[in-house]
Image (tube, rainbow, N blue to C red; front, top):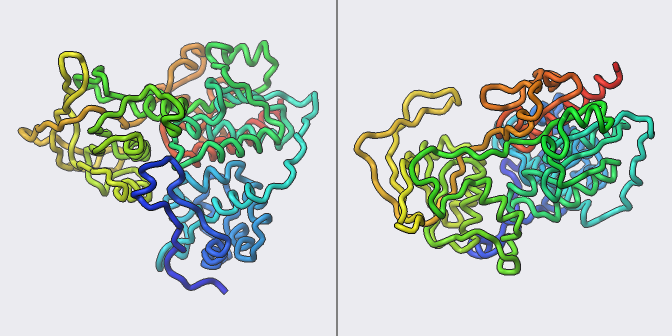
Length: 466
């Protein structure tokens, strides 16, 4: 019988007073007993709407039923029929806007904690390892497929294509695979050890990963197709070009883009400070500009690196913040302060070029804009200054133009994102497909994974016809 409990089984977390002093995971995960208790809340709907809310098409009721029966091995195997990154998704996927939003339980209480259950069985598998499957060895005559970028879209497409029998090679510009999963998400939300294990699993499927290869420089798309023997290419390079405010003072010492800030922290292992020296100078008063998950990550990292006071500056109200509610609450618990309906108009500094204050203006909300949220409008005469010595600008990212500049026949839109067929993810070049943030702009990890799955099927269909 289903558990009639109306609320989710609480997940243990580190105390805020302790976690702001370390980079360990905040949420500690379910115990076996808690997972079974939560799984029994699932109604096992005959026509489960939750599956429709999952971009990677996991049979959610099936894996939850296996958990409720204590069959954790069966549950993780069921998830891996569709999702090759379950430990990642269980941590960073916004289930509240996807599968859990569709959960029937949510109509009279809280939805089933699908994400927490996915994380539980993924972590259970890590602590109960079995011998990894022998590397799939595709036929030497199988077509070769190149995957550009090893973020969530690229890793998903690569794994699915390998399962289909193709010889798959992933090209990553940086020195380790993972893309935004490695360089953009803090250790306390997605530990590197978790990501390493997920990548190794994908390699065990027969995927080759070549790092320190920048497509557009090391090889062009044309060279991959004509000289390197690849029959098709999937481009999943993400959106890695930071956006700035375009206001005076952005070149002052102490002003970072969130992209630079989080990449330095992850790449240079600031989360192990002082064990590793990291070229980031966090002073006492930090301001983070923006209201998304990246802004929450940046603010919470700054706190852990020693900032005395961290303010999130957001031009709309709390209601309009695009960050996950869970991450906003975590930030509030940790002492992050929020200044809503506020936006900076200038960064100001001393004679040596060091940031020391920020001029802001108050905003009011007007009619909804193209995003569906009410448009922020400056209030005349409301300018004021805030003392601040470090600023992180977290207002989004765009498409890096390198690939399109070296491949002029690859059509992009006015914002530089690759244009694709909405159903097949095929680009203007017949052998080239693309998906994830390089197509949609900055979005979620799970949305990128969903695009990688669809593109893999399209590549398979294309290659079978040629």
